[in-house]
Image 1 (tube, one colour):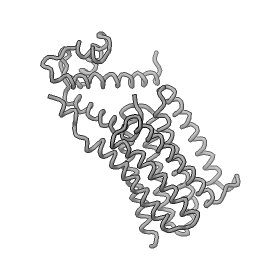
Image 2 (cartoon, one colour):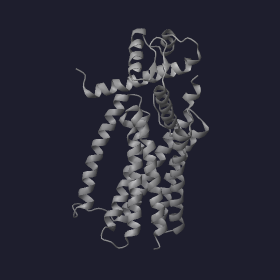
Image 3 (spheres, helix red, strand yellow):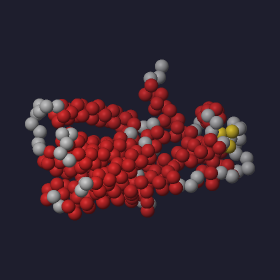
Image 4 (spheres, helix red, strand yellow):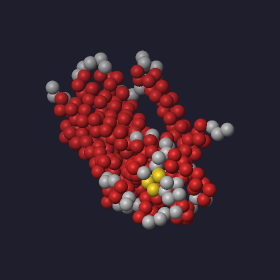
Amino acid sequence: MDNLFFVLVEGVSAAIAFVLVWFMVKPYRMTGENRFLGLPIGFAFLGVSYICMGASLSLGESSLLDEMRWLQLFTGAYAFVFIAVTYHLSFETHERKARLLMQAFASLTVLVSIFLFIVVFLPPVLAFPSYKAADEYFKVFNMMLALYVTLQTLRSHALKPESKTILAPLGYALLAFSQYSFLIWSLDSSFSAFIGAHAIRIVGLLVFLFVSYEAIIARKNVAREGQV
Amino acid sequence: MRDKSEMKRLRRDRLKVYMDILSIIRAESRREKMVLTHIQQKSNVPFDRLKTYISELLELGLIQDEALPKLTEKGLKYITEYEKVLDFMKLMGLTYR
């Protein structure tokens, strides 16, 4: 199967994204603040979008192909929206305001999901652009959000610069660049852009995996060492 | 009567104070004799409230000996996990506190 390699790459990307969910949920579990909940949800959506992409590559001419492609677009966009909202609210100094904004965002997400389900997956209610056109719009949208998160993380880095705090902006910049590369592939069917997009995305996810490993697993028990 | 969200908020605020107190106890553990006054001065918590917090930490099994508090194994593990998550948040560019 020609697409087997890319299906495998999607599978590996999804696996990394789901491992990252385990790390990303920790800030929410420790602080109990729902503004941090967008991070694990975002990475879970990323994982689901990679699975949908892998499934659409392996489905060939199946009748489910269209649904899977649309699902991949929406879950991918949801992922970046959740991550961007988390970073936006992370800078919110008023905890109560951040909580209310997160609740409003969650309600809006449910409404948008219902709307999209009606528009895309039920027999045509509204005229919707072709998949190819929508795919390009979504890639631009995702790229903008990933760039926004890159800037937010760079802002954090600039406030307290440390050698490792540059890794998060680097990871998000790579995800943004991979969206750009997917866009190029979508526009001119360049195979090298398609390969590049996958490679860049995997490297971006590995950067997050490295950051998570360094902070949670590799960090020695400083407290234990401090204890006499 | 406090509603659920208020209780949740209080729990979060309290968590931050607990962590401050536990960190001070750990930092002060090299002293031969650590008294509550030292903790009170560093944590900037009124003495009567500090005593309440110390009792709660004792109940949770995070410290031992109310008069001369010392971290238990559980307290040490808890503070280590908390610091790991704070470090992770810092590396991920998330702002907290």
